Length: 320
Image (cartoon, rainbow, N blue to C red; front, side):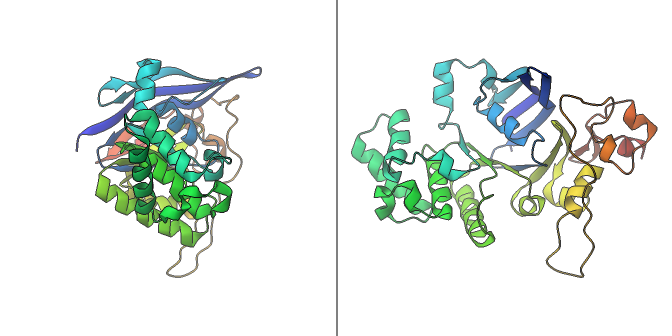
């Protein structure tokens, strides 16, 4: 598969009166055409910041200070406003975490769908309207809902509408930032099954962001784990989920109960996430790690390939 998106040494900072907090630190990864890449981690680890950087949605005090983001070889960070307008939604679209906040509460669903189409395509209103009806059918919503306002829809239906808007211009990459967080497990399963079917039908790639590794293990081809702005593990989804190498990834997996098999004790990750304004020397995870050695407090670990198609940033793995 050819590379669709390539991120090289990306750094994103938040500038505050108390100092500069680096939310994304030298992250490099690739997304292939038709691939689903999952990014997991605790709240505040940099997942959403990474997603916003790809579509250049950051506003002050956020600042992309270093790196490059290449979409089919073109650097997104060097695009003009006109190029960026054409790039968004045509090539890359975003499904945000809260559907209700993504939709305009005083405009009907039909108007919001047609508005996206009319803003980017030279078509008549009736053509845009027909396309909007078609999109609603694709995500399992009846055409009668074109006249509904967001508050008249259930949470699952609103999320489907947001997905329909993201699909409107048939982009090659859809960024999904915890799209099922506020939904119950039944609706979550229905939406993810529909999303998988749509991916097979239209052939787009997905960057799926979540803190739920068990969910990600089912839908992603590869999984990347982030902690304190760093990409600390990246590899095949089944391999990361079943045999994680980084102590942080192991802690995330151990905090989820298994549905089948014998009951096992759950183990959480001790301590709290590191303060980005006071990053320690060496490994960011050292204060919460039960396997920490002397080198962990002296040198920052590098993301290295320790197995075929698998990378991890941990001194313990380097020693092994």
